[in-house]
Picture 1 (cartoon, rainbow, N blue to C red):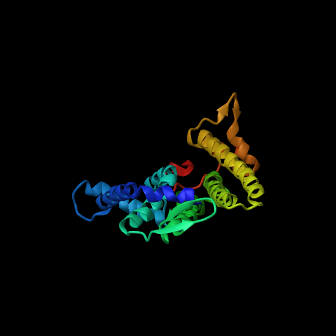
Picture 2 (picture 1 turned 90 degrees about the horizontal axis):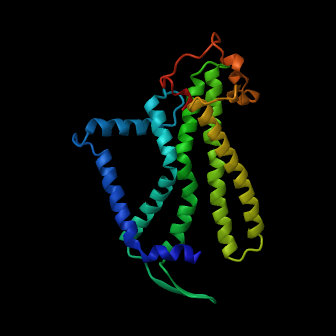
Picture 3 (picture 1 turned 90 degrees about the vertical axis):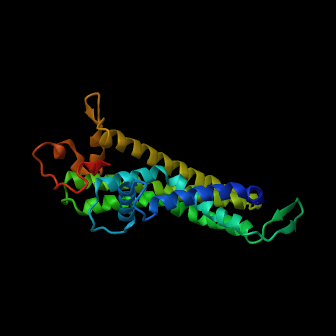
Length: 266
């Protein structure tokens, strides 16, 4: 574990500079002054507040869906942002230097920061990384509740929610693997078998999430579901019968339009 933490102690300036940049950008975005494109900044702030509200009754707007989709692409950045914040604060507070010696090496530990920072990041990372996917999942459930039961739109919202929910096992299994790797470094005999088991689970979860997301984007987002005269959009009809070609044909009952307009497939 020491090799994973010690390099952080050697370059506190990096975290300090990155923290200053994030702090300046945040102040510019959220400052109440009416200059530097106030209408754009206020619209972004209001959209951010709307998507963070855990409400299933509020309408879901197209701009909120687009913003949440953008945040899913930035999920890794949020995890790194938490690390930057912790290390930025750490760079402002002089650590208490201690010299620790074991049988294999002599190394420098920086008081409480050495393990506490690492364990805090280890705990927070999967939750912070999962937030954008949970936001999109909540939006899908919100749209599902506002759709007519048994309609094509309701089935699409359920299928879309699965896409974002399937990202969570990938994120948490990746974190569990790192925890097991730390036990492996500490000499645990069972850690290697646990790591292989978690890795296999992660491969299955990642494969399902990647293939399902690619299928959804290809068929429903990009409208490329027809291949060689075959409608591959009907594959989901085994789980959601409402998505069968017969149910999607013109003349069948559709749910009323949602505030997101044509964003039901986003």
